[in-house]
Length: 389
Ligand SMILES: *Cc1c(COP(=O)(O)O)cnc(C)c1O
Image 1 (cartoon, rainbow, N blue to C red):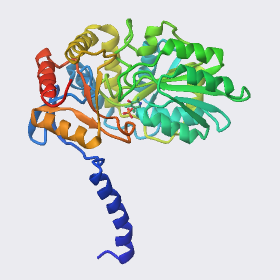
Image 2 (cartoon, rainbow, N blue to C red):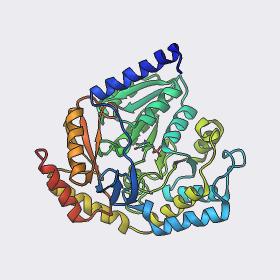
Image 3 (spheres, rainbow, N blue to C red):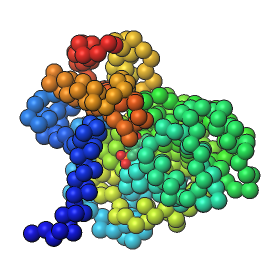
Image 4 (cartoon, protein in one colour):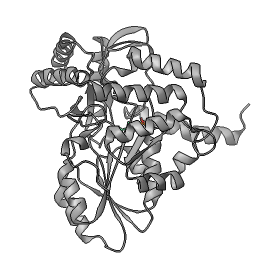
């Protein structure tokens, strides 16, 4: 029996949930039974997956799976501690050395997830006297990290360098300035102008913190280490790059690549690094193998870019990445279209506020190197039957 007071407390939560449902904003968990990408078994139905960030199909790669299984056999399933308290294996160090070579930086550090990396980096390196300049469409983990730092946060309109420069000019030179941005925007798929951002960071003596969650493994002529690689600017003292293993690299976890001094600071002060058990050997070994594969072989990304060009032609618009948003506007309409696509055999996620700004609810189509040209045709045909393309 619940006491009256308990019922009262619960009823306020129930009201919140009912309100969300009434405005088509309630989030629900869709359960996948058998991921055999690009097809997945979803609530008993076989559908083609167009919402995964597993862009290269690496979660299913036999060599990565084998590396992971071997690591379990050798090291077991867990590390038994945080990195600073007995939780650092030679495998973690090997991955960090490989990352520094991949990113061409002095040093690198592994974090347990992209969310933890962003929260940990911003809160460790930025003090409450400093100023953060953040793109309005940055990932939520960067927003939360900025809050934790207690710094002054200036959110500039998406990609608006004029506005950013105005802010930089006005900021006090007494304290540090940090420009923080996604390189590939997760819900829009467009790209940050990194060379111009770097120039601004030099002109106004600011740090530049880049989130390569959707860039790592996809961009970069020589290593495919991220969009920064394409600038040709290499290792720069004021640039801090983070990225994840959870998207194109097919597994889980994140990294920060920077100067040795920055990495040493993170080991001392980054609370999400210090106070969390380190990633298990199976995950570290998968990440190591994924980096080795992507560095050594261009063909994985070439197949994906071929698919991006196919979808680009079908939608008759330019795509900068495997993320193709189709903006619908209203949350309820977006949900209805996503459900209709599901009935037709296509798993496309509806993305609604607060993940994206009000009035910009959208379908977020993501491509994989595993999709066939025919599957992309089928999706766009189904889509054309539902909305004006
Ligand atoms: C997914 C994502 C993250 C979070 O990474 P996880 O490893 O999933 O925690 C951070 N930043 C961006 C831009 C992302 O898309």
